[in-house]
Structure formats: structure tokens, C-alpha cells
Length: 162
Image (cartoon, rainbow, N blue to C red; front, side, top):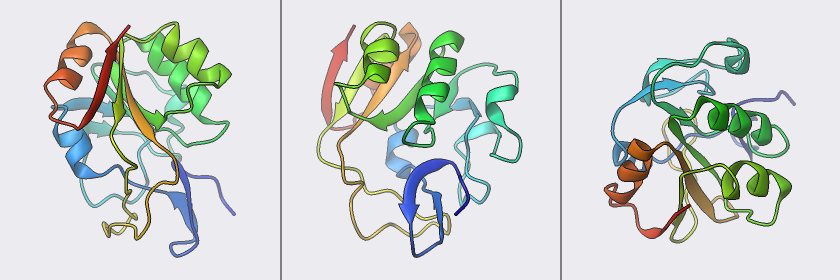
């Protein structure tokens, strides 16, 4: 099996690229860069997209970044990079006890929005998955303007300003 972006395993599509539900990023305003974008996507999330073919971790990041990283052990690299960049929002599982969460969220983020319920992601063909993600998710903001975006997003959940 090949490694992809998004990190949720899909036997049906035979890959692990899953798309963020559109209402999540639409409620957050425009983004300049999605550095870990799926290769195939039915809708744009940012003005510029890097896919696994581009190796977004090795590229320069500019502007406001949207980051739905590959889940699992790869997520930490992406969250670290977003933290260092300082301007963006990441969508990750709300695994608050992990070393990654302590290192790059609790100690470095500007705010966290814990999303009510479990997200249902989309397949790369734009079809909504039949089941939820299997774990709770959160949005992690870096930078004051991104805290404001979470506050005004209309996404149901609990916002914690750090």
C-alpha cells in the first residue's frame, strides 16, 4: 500500500487520501497554501497546493496555511512545520494525551477548536464516506488571525484559546 495524504485508510478507494469536509475549510476563510493536499481533489482548499508528489515538507510555505496532514506518525512532522511557520490551521485527531499534542498544540498553538461529534471525511472522488473518522477531531490555530477565524467559523464545538 502506498502512503498518501490525509492518513485515513480507504479500502474502497485503495488509498489513504481523504478529504476534509467542505464546511470545515469554507467556514475558516481563504487559505494561501495547502502543503499536504491530495493528488486528486474535487475542490480546491487554497490558492496553491502541494501534493505528496511535490513533497510539501521540503517546499517553502508562504501565507496562511491549511494543513490536514497524513494521520499517524507522519502528522507530527507537518504539525511541527506549521507551528514553525506560525500562520495557519491544522485539522488533526484530538488525541490530547500524545507527545505530539503536548509539544505542538498545548505548548505552541494559539487556540484549539474541539469539534463536536466525529467528522465524516470524503473520498477523493468527492463522495462522502459512509462512516465517521473513528476518533474526535480538532482544529489547531497558529496566529491571532487564525484564532479569530476559529471564533467566527460557525463550526460546532468548544474553542480553547491558549
